[in-house]
Image (cartoon, rainbow, N blue to C red; front, side, top):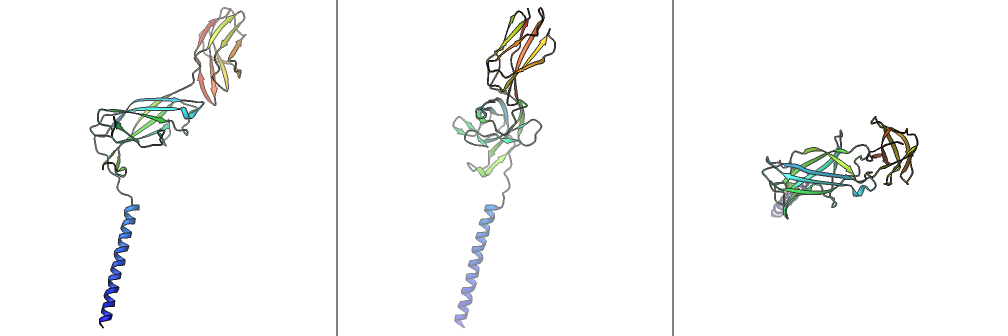
Length: 257
């Protein structure tokens, strides 16, 4: 009888032990996999885009640059910032990373972590390869500030409302050395070849509208216009085509002889 009672006590003890063990395992699972409520952004966290410099290298995309200066205009420190960019009219925005692949980007005040109110911080970023660079020069830049609700715990990052701004990018290749020389019965255009697939020649007569008069694939970057009339004023520019990207040169004007 006593042995039976001891056996039942041991059985109950084992059941309790197993139940507690399963509870611990279940709690650990739920703690790990059940999503937590995202920390809320506190009022007073605010960043603005002080300056944005965008340069697109159309021959080597890895050298395209997006340089953004952020200013903290709020009353609290901003620890990090997400940076995204899109073509105008598109809802989806691509992440903009640094050379270290970071996004969100850490913000600093000197060597101190976090950007304090009234301070500025410069981000040197890599222009995303997926963004279309063939048809436009303007893009939508989005900055989303964030702050830590617990010291140095990335899981406590609270996301604040994003700001957007339209930025204008410049191409790193320019055709700004076009010249025109006049000789009897012709005008000679010359410029330095910048690696374009081909060039389109545009001409205006007597300050009228420009019309394309020819196309050249010459790498000597020289064009002879024999269809001039003595005494008339002609203006020219050339348009370089770089893999669908159009770069216009400076304009030059001459009077034919």
